[in-house]
Image (cartoon, rainbow, N blue to C red; front, side, top):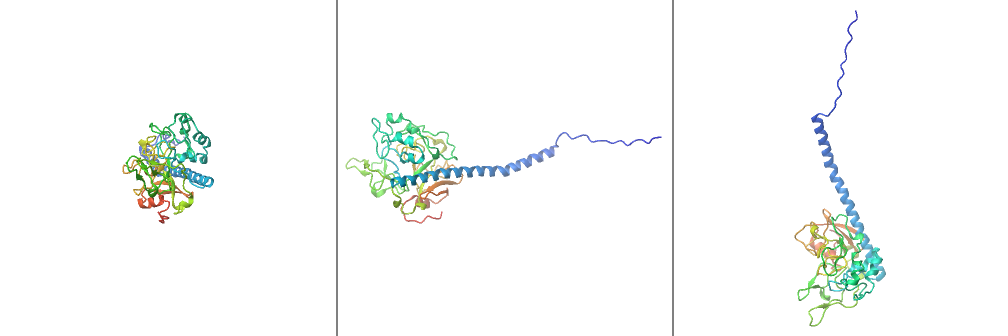
Length: 333
């Protein structure tokens, strides 16, 4: 008689995770995301800041090329009118925009030339060339959430390409006696490497209450930067609130530099109030530098080096770095 064969029971295969296992996996994934996401965001910001620095380094090198060719830096502006052109027009051939520069420097009916460019940017014949809408790629910061690259406000000399960088006019500016315009007479020049007037310009017209520009309007030579090129800010990122992109004042076209809608479009000042602490900082105005980087603003110095400067830098130190000849040693900040 045969003995009964032992029976073998096989476990049925599992078809799903238990709730505990599923929650454990979710918790692990969430932890990994929490660990890696800041690192990814930090790497992206580092890349944006690096690219921003590269743009400003290119601009600094272009300033040097201009100085090599002309023996001086470009002036901040060609005149004291809303329609006067800015330093950006003069720099076009040095930032690979020679075709646009030719449009700016070709005489047209009713639009005279002065100091290297069309003097009246509001001239209709000139506007029809489209020169004002030449956007310069290196003038845009990759960290900026800019939705537009052209002006949206109809202002004198406007309706042109914008940008995120500005030249440094220094730390001082003076009102015209009649309170209507800003100017720098010889004894009160703006103090940066790109003053709004050269050393001998903007003399008050006798009995008119208005200021006038001389025909010659050169920029400054390097020898005028007596604090040293490596210690003097040449250009940096502009403070532009997110709701002011393309708007008059904060973000008018780079091709003008005047208070009537554009004084600080292509120029900013290193005032002793310091930098904008954030893009929405309510305590500062269109005069100052700022950025969309989390904690720093990127600047190009006169010797071509680029440096990220803390937004909390002391205003007095920033003002000193922005002056070309104050005699202060601001190596360490």
